[in-house]
Image (tube, rainbow, N blue to C red; front, side, top):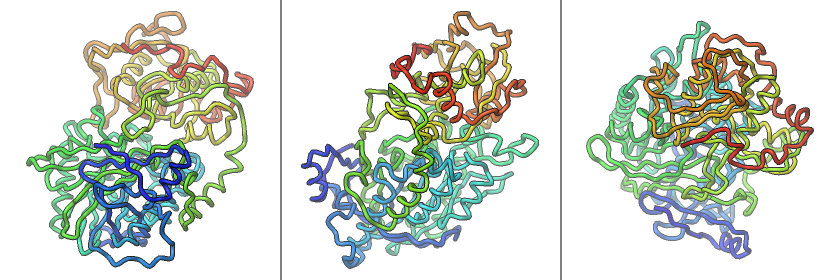
Length: 606
């Protein structure tokens, strides 16, 4: 259920000034407000920072006050209101380094502060994938974002699959720096949990339990070798199995333990997502196989769906997701009697961040400005020009919150063509592959800076060229296409090659217990594969340019390249390859050959 609500005179004035902004309130029930600080009383005391200052909102079924929530009408020195005994759980997910996007961390902090001044207590949680996705994360290995999370005073967080993208040691070190606990009931090393499975926060006299769970697909969608020992054996895992039962049991055990420790309510913080391809570990799988969950705050798939479904015993459970890059902030309003009154999201679906339209001056805004300023000189260097926009999104379709719909993980785009061409050109190879999950941002028409290219390729992967057989190419295309028309980070955009996908044929790909490629059974859905103008020869050897994540580290489950011979081994950073392709091959300008956002017709989906 989605409704658009204006709130606060300042936002109305901004609207009247023809700024064309919109603020949406989306909920699975009503709209409300409340929250305050939280103290750790349970399973891990890894947190030094108590909850900071809270945000705002208006009353249920009235105009949702995210502008008033942003504190535009309140004097910052106004005395804090008497506490009203109610709580707001505030949630972010898949921030992906977007600390100055959407509401921004400054807006989030202001909303929290405003709520607390209205008498609510707040608990602030994050559903993972916070530290990766933009240059501020890439150039600091996530540390700059983690420090800002400390400044915002998060109360609890879970690891998403991309928390591990800078290496296992790096993430575990960051987790120690965090002034809040990371929790997960299924992330383990050789069978022993790395973090506590749950934590209990106390607010307004209520004990609220939070259980963490991270998708087992992390093993394939981060860097698989980061979870392995020197012998290539997985020593870290997420209770992956064939039917999902190990994860369900772990969640149930953590929920039951939180209840036994006195939790009045139990929230699950999940980084599981809603895609069918995430089975047997998507949010619906977990809810339908467990009991005792009051609210499921979910991330991973970047959706903003608000869903009510039944658990194993038929009790209704709200599942709420908040999209990505702070375009939405999740809330769950708890009464003084411990009843969940409403769970939903506040959405900022405008082209400009809140901070650009309604500037916020608070301690967090200063910290964000300092962090972003530190990057400006290096990132602002212009390295090329584009005559066209290169996109990861569908140019016309929008989701219910007004955000563009991502296309790069399920279909060809001009940016996918461009990157694959760059790989093939730089590697002087027959074929170029790039998986959609490693293309993270579009490139606008006009000047291209270092920052633009790092945003496209934030992981610091390296280009490689391997000798592979036509059969390995066919297996890779089949694996990458297994989820179409749904998304998959392993979907392959290509250069030097064309292919068709027949979606009337169910995928015959076989996954092992770690979500890695293990073979193909039955009819293939990938057809009419040509290298240049010639049909591919399964027995012939071709040179394939890609990055080490896919070709060497089994990224996105591409195990078919194990043991291949490399003619060029990690010879250049991926984003440097893009720069060199534009400068040296394209003469400094991306031209009209890439004008069509749907690409050059290399991939046909039937």
